[in-house]
Image (cartoon, rainbow, N blue to C red; front, top):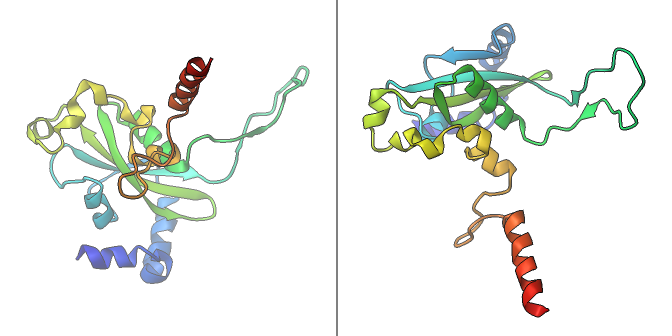
Length: 197
């Protein structure tokens, strides 16, 4: 079943047709952050750790597309370094995860996935876990998220989307990550310079 769902979501506009257009038409009129009863993409949610049990929450998060612009100064002199353009350092999926986490402060973000986009918005569904729920605490597969070292993981670059944007994805067999840590390289070079002198 999941194989066929995955095939449909490879090209949703052509596969789903009017259903996809109708969904976007309705989603535009909904709040930016909305809790759902069940995931829109069941195959993707399950592959990212979602279980249909108490303690798991699905949230659909809407984000505006396009560049970010600073507000124009209302009065006074223009600063020398003034520019209205503001480049976002992280990708839209990470922004969606962080906004969902701010709405549900008692939950931790497990993962997220893309569901739709149009000319104005992106929509992502975020999987949240209630770390204080007794079902989550007693489940050995997910209770690692209750540990204190995993607190606020979405704001510390520990979700899958954030690791991807930081270039920390595993690449190839035996490779630890795509690039080494910038700080680790700096200190390694510094140590090598000391040894040569």
